[in-house]
Picture 1 (cartoon, rainbow, N blue to C red):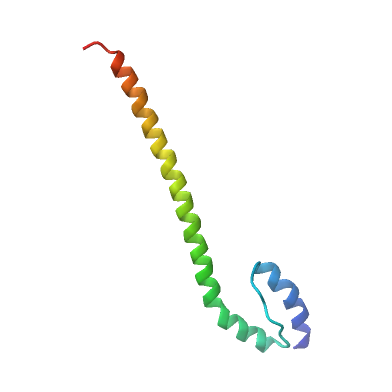
Picture 2 (picture 1 turned 45 degrees about the vertical axis):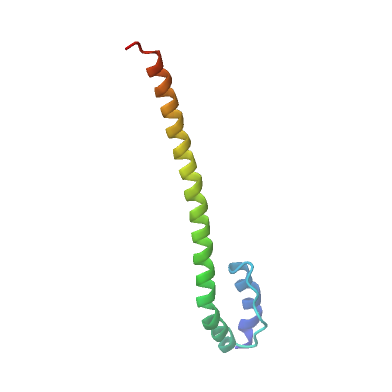
Length: 84
């Protein structure tokens, strides 16, 4: 299975950016390495997703808050011109 290693050194890093892959000499080593690391990678990806989601949620919350403040300001201006 020595034919697998050079393509793995090229293909895997392209699909797993930022992940350090050790040298492997056969398919069994690749399978063992992936089995050991898959849980770690999954947790890292989940963590990154949560951070991105929180960031987007904060941004959306600020947009909604700004819209509400603007709406209330416009309403206050309209009502302040109305004679009671």
